[in-house]
Image (cartoon, rainbow, N blue to C red; front, side, top):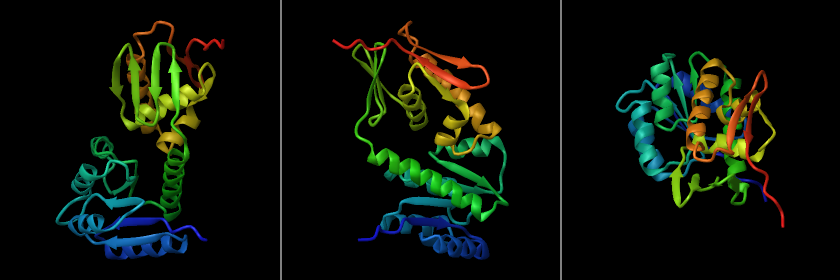
Amino acid sequence: MTDEKVKILLCEDDENLGMLLREYLQTKSYDVDLQPDGEAGYKAFSKNKYDLCVFDVMMPKKDGFALASDIRAVNSEVPIIFLTAKSLKEDILQGFKLGADDYLSKPFSMEELLYRIESILRRVKGKKSKDVVIYQIGEFVFDSQKQLLSHGGNSKKLTTKESELLGLLAANANNILERNYALKTIWVDDNYFNARSMDVYITKLRKLLKDDLNVAIINIHGKGYKLITPQLKED
């Protein structure tokens, strides 16, 4: 019994680029559905099941951001990669706020797109194959599958990035989590923009964990971070 092909929804209004990308990904054994604009993309998404979406940002009828927003309203899980001629941080941030998993600025190599797709699919597959993982972090309880951080009867729903980063820290509790490993695992790329983004999420996690003075996330200069948490004593 062979595995079913991964099905990708590709929305690109540049006909030549769209066909080149579709043919390239098909040679890599992906099942690719190419649509010429956002409206056609949403209709296709409504009728079919896709494992991953690749959207050009600048498209007629419905742009990539609007399409992603509509899709996120009905499906919060499917990975989305944006292809954009825009490199402004505001546009990139807008994409991430809409729930994008990654973006590529044009021009890009097909090999780079393939690398991003494979990295995201590995991450998604890893999530699905894992059992429910619950971490005790001092006085906190972190349910990584439900993305819930609980303390004293109160629960906070974390964002996907917050949950992924806290999960890596908790899995390596009291040991160093290497910065580059975390960046490539969660953000796929260890570029400057993503590194600054991770620093922001570390600050958010510190605030979420501040109610237990025995818990801390410390910087290990030149290496990464370490989640300090009391060791559980076995009876």
